[in-house]
Length: 486
Image 1 (tube, helix red, strand yellow):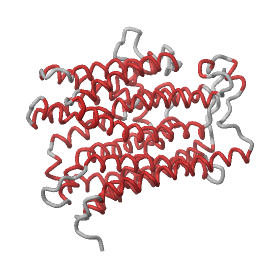
Image 2 (cartoon, helix red, strand yellow; image 1 turned 30 degrees about the vertical axis):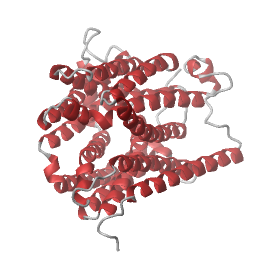
Image 3 (cartoon, one colour; image 1 turned 60 degrees about the vertical axis):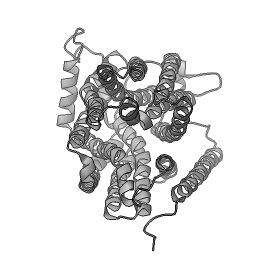
Image 4 (tube, one colour; image 1 turned 90 degrees about the vertical axis):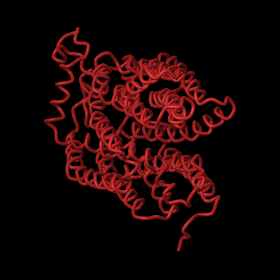
């Protein structure tokens, strides 16, 4: 039987165990994968057809002695890791900057947070249509500029400047979580990379995201300790974003959605309302896409709510007036997320040769992942033991590590390139409405009810995925679309 409270070094020990286990799992998974490829005589990565190398579609991705997959993977993951590091640098000290350094009330700080989510929700659909129309690479370059400007806004304590920064930050966030993934999916398809190759890239991206989060937390903590100001992580974030701008400009090629005259209402339609209406109509007519969007709202909505509630939830289960090592706990969550990405990569790489087509396997993983996440949250609010609550939160974070590459593969396969960025951004609208609505109702006072609701919607999402998306992926695998003419 567990003691009511853990020993003082409990979380440090758990972090160490998780980190060692994660490191061993990564080494073993990579070694087994390398041995399999060596035994089968494969190269380091899926090869692209010679024609794709010669027709110019992937020429800028190819270096001497490199195949397209390896170049695409390195170019994307390098940028993605730096961009996510810039994002994670800001996270730990946003609240402290507004509340402690600038002295604004809890109510004002809450409005600043809600402003960011609202801006992301309203700008999301337009970000998507602009990316499809004007180019995904170009919009990602805009992201770097916008997010760097938002970092500069934190240097001022004047409330209009801070609200302007949150507005721009929300716009940038909408780009970050839709257009970057859209770019790599389209680039991989144009270059002839297989679905297995794309799943490898997405799985590695989630692993790098976890590493970036862990490193950024330590770096931001050290910066604040040395510089004695909460703005220092934001300034370093801005530097990384400027570096990312140059990397994207140099390393990435451009790709677009549909460019024919039937899309949109004219070249002067800056909001691209015609393209947006067409995308909405596509989702409305396709139950599988509706469920895919529902799954994103349920899972990511629960994840964002978890971000707001895990600290008071852990404090509630801890001894009165206990000083929790929140940094260690946060790092343990990030390592758990990395473990989830390793599990995903291992399952996909070792199951595909013997079982389902890639898309069917990902649909089944999506359903199982939502179910496990639902159980993790259910356990968390059904116990008062901090150890059990901590482990259940770690399990939920592991599910987050599985979720992103699985969802990326499903969106990449089920959404046509013509409207890929538009639909990816459109899916985030109900997500932002969901999170903003719950935040405005005061979730801290109703933690058990909120976690219960999140557990239920995740279970519902699992059922809908099983009965709608899995059959669709089976049909798609049995009747693959014909390749586009060159």
